[in-house]
Length: 117
Image (cartoon, rainbow, N blue to C red; front, side, top):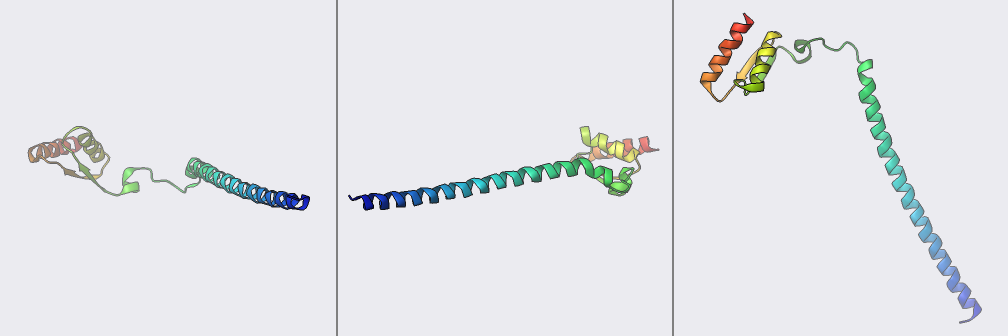
């Protein structure tokens, strides 16, 4: 190979390396921008969650104002459902009780009615 041929090969390899380097640079830039966007988006959502309650106009003070007059409670004859039913009835909500056992449902209904009166 002559000197001119060597320079031509070197120049073409140099151009290829520059193109490859530019490609890697662009990919790195895109990944960095994507990461910063995701981080910024997360930061904004955290700040919004923390600061939003301070800027909301008059929040409802009780459950009736917030959710309405009725509550539907499933599994209302035992455990947590029963206690929710009692507490919501105490707070003045109309309670619809749902249960698989009619006898238990009648007993809990009577118990809540007696506590409320």
